[in-house]
Length: 145
Image 1 (cartoon, one colour):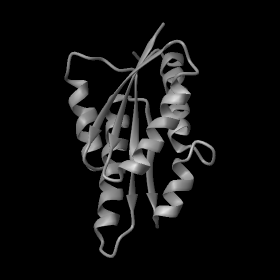
Image 2: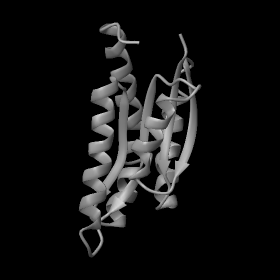
Image 3: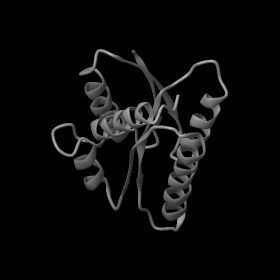
Image 4: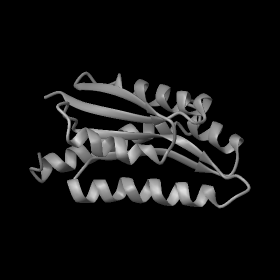
């Protein structure tokens, strides 16, 4: 059975998010039973909204991959973006039994982000895909469709 994945990419730091997408897509392409779509949004706070919208649309997805990067700045904005984006994703996952892979980097600086996004280093994009696939398998185990 083919599974459909939706990658929602916050492209505020597009040079970092493009690396996350590369890692995610390379991981997806290792599996013949996966289809995927990629949607780009401006920032991390928009990711939960887009996933919620998709639940009410005609396209159906078995899993979701949240990709993007939040880098700490000089204000408390970083803390709010991190808290609300992760809370939004967690609330959706729990309320709707969604398989969501978290590839949303929350880092102190760009150097940390680059290491985590690089497919030859931490490859958090690929990691998020694998986390999502594990959750899809668990949904099948519990007969949640």
